Every structure is written in structure tokens, then in C-alpha cells.
Length: 119
Image (cartoon, rainbow, N blue to C red; front, side):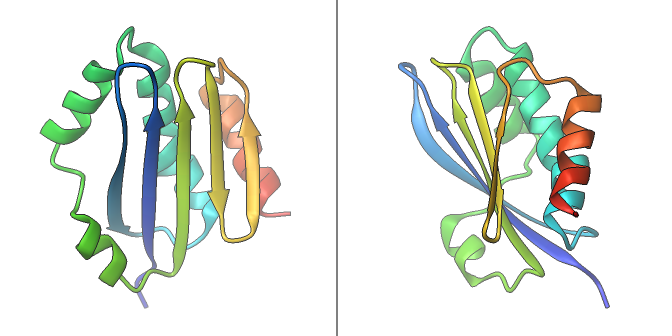
């Protein structure tokens, strides 16, 4: 059986406010999605001086799906990212669990946070 995920990405900043949606296969727990998908987005956002650069890269990569496709998906796990760009705050949620992520996370810190989700 193939595991699937649905990930919403909410971005808030003075430059832009909006939500994007990703649906994919291979990961069926919040821990796996944070380790392998969401952490890449967190690090990409953190490294861009402007929200527009992150958004252009995400949209050009063709990862996103429409809101209706996202809502019609029947994923193994639903989760989301919230970027408060102006305050350098990142939050990840999966099911009933929400974790606040520091303003300057590293890949190893994100993996550690993901491991904590599974316990």
C-alpha cells in the first residue's frame, strides 16, 4: 500500500499572504513529511531574502496542486506548514500535533523535531 500526504503551506508576510498545496506519495506520517518534504521548504524559505523568490521557485518547480485537488485527496497523513516571515516563525502541524520551529533551524534540528513527533 502506498502512503500519501497532503501538505498545506501558509505564508504570511508584508509582501504576500497566501496558501499553497502539495500532494505526494511515499510518506505516510507527519515525521516523514517533516523530514523529507517540509524541511526542504523551511530551509528554502529561510535562505531567501524575499518571499517572492521562494514562491517563484516553488511554483516553477511545479510541486503545487489546486485547492480542489488538495481537498479531494484522500491522504494517509494531512499536515501543514505556517511561515510567519516577518517574525521569523515557523510552525508545522500533523494531525493533532503542532510544533513551533525556531527562527533559524538547521537540517539536523528539523530532523530532531521530526523524530520527536514520532514519540
